[in-house]
Length: 207
Image (cartoon, rainbow, N blue to C red; front, side, top):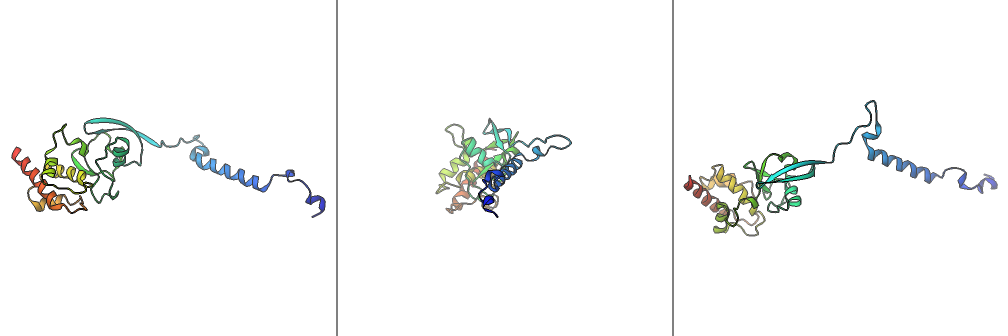
């Protein structure tokens, strides 16, 4: 290379760094635009909506929400509605701390999507009492001292309500079987079983 060529300003052509920057920016725009940028015979394709508009009926009240399709019922209850009774324990549906009732049936709210519950009746532990009057199962848990740290207690109580309503409180062995999806790390199982049995007997007496 001659001395004249060595002293030629870089402005005579685009710098390699500028070309690379421009190419990277173009690629980023294309990725962000997705299918809509491709067009085609049918014209641009609209991107799917990131959120869904739903109405959750929880504890007798309706709550319109806009949520992403991936939001779990547990996260919607805790983070959007401020109902923190249901707890996030294992986040895999194994411990039962997040148990709620959906149309009267037990559901692990960490493993079900909020958008799937539209049109259904969701009941959390906050919806069991009537004003200052505790639900019979709640009263039984207090009377039997069926909790220590209390973390699993809301899920235990909700599950116990369903257990009694389903008619599975006939014996302590039956209660253990039908409450086995709710774990207590403090080991209060004997007291929990006694509380569920008390509530079941009270329900039988009312019938």
